[in-house]
Length: 443
Image (cartoon, rainbow, N blue to C red):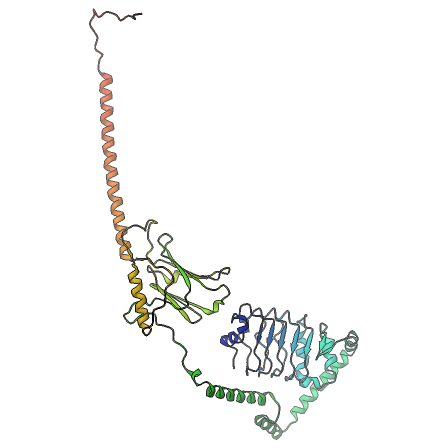
């Protein structure tokens, strides 16, 4: 078995299947052979992988917060790839296959784990060497417990005094084992291989074969117990109805809003999802005439009020509220901000909305259509907007001509007034009769 995304979600039901903040997961007795996809749980602190058939420690370098790793009863032959686990405090490798040949390298690889306090190596071939405990204690200064026994300061002092002798002894034992292995005859090697194949010898190969057979038997029993489990998974509703129209549905009953983009030049859809829902449960597809969001296997799909450009669209998730926001620029953006109230806007009546709901219900087997929780009020086509642009340009041209004529007329009137004033100023004054008596004030 492999560590898949579905398996991780299934084993994290205590955390509502959310992997982003998962701190503990148990994957024991799953016949797992490879450690993979663990980077999806970056905040893991406790990881149980005991009683599997894992051959190599790998893909855990990104688990910076991991404190406890349990790999007991596996096929691990070398301790490696744990340098990135900066917070590792407890490592359980009980009953694995760490030999004397790999002991020196395994201990050297653990020196980078400065927080390591507890280590379990009991049941490994290297643990049969009497000097194994002192060798490990002398090389790992942070250890407080080895194989469940506390490490006292006096034990560490004695082990460090013996370190040179222990290294020489370990090197001698490794050379002896290599020499003994080289002296084996082909018949002896074939006998060991057959014993491993038959399962009479406890080796990595025989253990792997045994666990695979156990997994196959359990799978057959599960099929016999639940025959309906092999049925095909539920298919998602198609994009189009039988008559070719775009389906409109909201299976998740999510609350949403749609801004037709009359002023911003974009159609904005906001889908109000639960705040703590993992984003890995969400799939979004934006097309020129509709958008489709699949949330936990439930489809929310709607026609857009105008044609949009999918290549320039953006999908964002709010970290505060968890809502999903789709910003889709219009394919034919209007030139002005006064689009509302102009011609070319076709209002969608409540009857047409109800008709679409009824058609969706008929297509799903006669059941009532999914209730849409939102409002789609405007349908604007590119032809309408082009016609509106032409009408607006014609109106502006006529207005400019009218203003020009009025300006020219005002100029002519101004010239006539100036001519009249000049003629009046040049006209000679008319004198009165000589015998006109002077005016006197009367008191």
